[in-house]
Length: 226
Image (cartoon, one colour):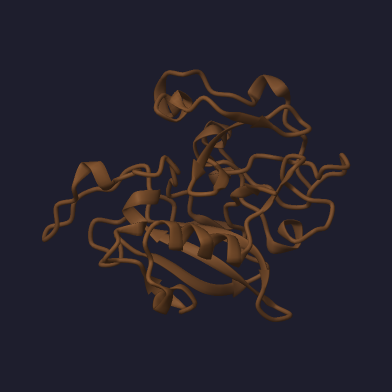
């Protein structure tokens, strides 16, 4: 169980890591006082940053919600990492009027960004021709064989950052990947996720992956307005 955060730690100053994020005007607040920037993409409204809540809407505590590397300085950069049991809990992690994005919510986003219908329902890395990965990521280093058009990076103001994951007590892949839970179950032990890759050597930097993962992993969460 994690300790509830205080309102004093809910919002970064407009300097530093969140200076561009905080140029977004629209916000929503969760029951703890955490304030999140929001962004409209097509007909959807998304959190433009990762969830930080340690409580469900009824005030009860979540069971996961770890800060990457257990470093408080990472909270406002990366948000918290949750297991799927908290993500799927009917008490709802998100602010009132919002929900954890489902697989269908992500598919709607991908369609809005130009993914062809033939790819939308596939597993694996998709959307490369439309640079969907670049459009969602806050930043992306050029690779040795590819230079990225700066106007494509974070085009949607989604501000996805490489928070990494927590698995079996270890924090891994920070700086290399971000993994987002969806609220959609795949099997009794697996749920559907989205992945973005950041490393300069990774061939999938322009893409977004649809896959399944063990519900025990701890990943980032984005909410969408209901």
